Length: 180
Ligand code: FNR
Image 1 (cartoon, rainbow, N blue to C red):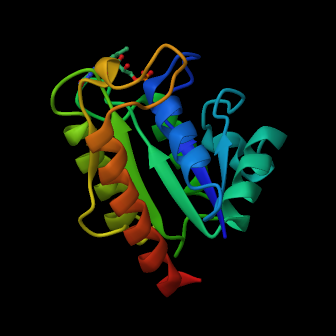
Image 2: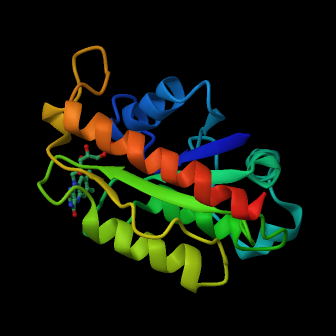
């Protein structure tokens, strides 16, 4: 099984990237997780959508080939970061690579609410909008106070968070089978 992770932060020391890397390493025997890089993706422009840059075509091809998508989002100004919205805009047009593709969402922030508002918006965008991506029901992963939950090497060390994610990932694997 092949899953791609789309991380809504291009910051080198991103907690959300660390969270994606945790999933990649901890469940390596269960599925292959490729973390996609949003840094090279230019701003969406409808003028060029039919002749999209190669970076956009490459990332869309990876999403299309994946069995499922893991979204890992920070919260910026109570919603998803622009870098994530930009990637979604590209995926929503021409070759609509998220159509019917199962998804789940996680997010980390330093605040106590751990990206609740961003994830609410992302759920709406992915499922209710034209993207038509079925979303893992319930199983919401909010990693609040993220600065206290990773060590200096970037590893997730918070035991209850690790155990909770174990349960969610098991549920995701089971639920995803409906779409394979
Ligand atoms: C933030 N941050 C933030 N946090 C939050 O919980 N709610 C919010 O609305 C915002 N808004 C916000 C806007 C902008 C422009 C920045 C730069 C930051 C803080 C944010 O959660 C924190 O910087 C995270 O560490 C960002 O995620 P990464 O880059 O560590 O993955």
